[in-house]
Image (cartoon, one colour):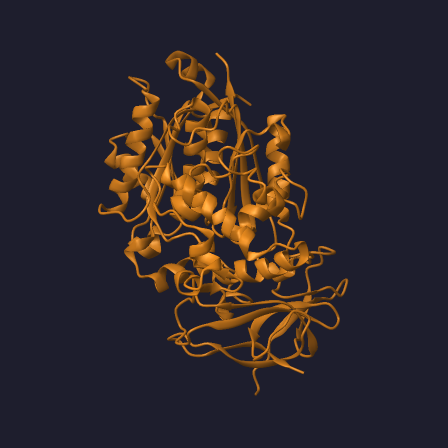
Length: 394
Length: 112
């Protein structure tokens, strides 16, 4: 397989889009293309990650639409839908195209415009990825699966609501330093947990999870430009190598897992990504994890191998996952505060990490970051894509 | 109540699955027979969810994963005023969702 490099990364500010879906995607794509500075080198393939435009925006075949908006004909174009893991799946497809020799320059754009519908419809749209016959019919939504998971996980490992609050506070703090983040709102332990007014400020969403344990509903788009070694060398771009990608699936219904607290697909996908990259979790300098719910940042950081099972909440307590800690997690603000336009999220994680490895994450830069890890979590952990990026010295 | 909820027993190795699989996750067998889900068990975990999908008028839903005696795990609605992990319940079948196309029946759990 040929090595594959990320040579450009860009995104829109997450939040609420004032422009149509394809213009939103076009803005992120253009930012990534400017960042890559391709000159006369053509983009030969365009891949779009999107989960629900067919339902929420009444538009399908978004990749064809984006090629047209960018006048990139006759580039090949494909749309990838893999639930909330669509973004990293699309990057994987682009990676495979270049690694196999079929393509030299691939533009991968993730986009979602979920605020085009009301909150109930958005929640139902996301819930429709749950198992239809044994979960969805009962009123299962993604927050409810997270609540069922959180109660089991917290009781087993002694995780308390204050640990979850620490994750939320950290990610809100990081997002304050990220101009692309949806939520710019500093929060405190008093305000969301310990003060009397916290019960009003932070109502339950799916017990034991409350509002400040959950990501917002966001519009947004993120894009990366991938290239072969030959193209990367010609451009003299900083060398951010896609060192390894791993992917794994698990049972659709959460209740069918022998141990529902074991995020097996995260474990297997991460192990495969590390194996292909020839690296260990202890060598990672910065990570973006899929904290659609605060409990998931804790659980994923264990399943990926950064902490022993049952220990991550202690590391959070010690501040190890803060920007200044041993392993900064979600410097972007994570899904919690940067926002979660579902199809864009997996790409946005890699945008942040590319900026971090290039030393371009001003205000939230992790010092001397050379290796980076992302976990993009689809369904409720039934389809997970993990990616290791590494900066190569030129 | 005539409505029933079924799991699927692999006729080769006896493994019971809910939901059904076309290939048995245990032995790769390909033939199954329906098995009515009914009986007692214990609450493995539960949640009160306020972030509801469409089709519900209520303020929140109490959902649970229950491990039935015999080992089969099922998700359903918990009709218990005082829920707790490990609490004993029995299955019943009721209307669990009412979309425009008509009511859907499914598993509900009541305290024993």
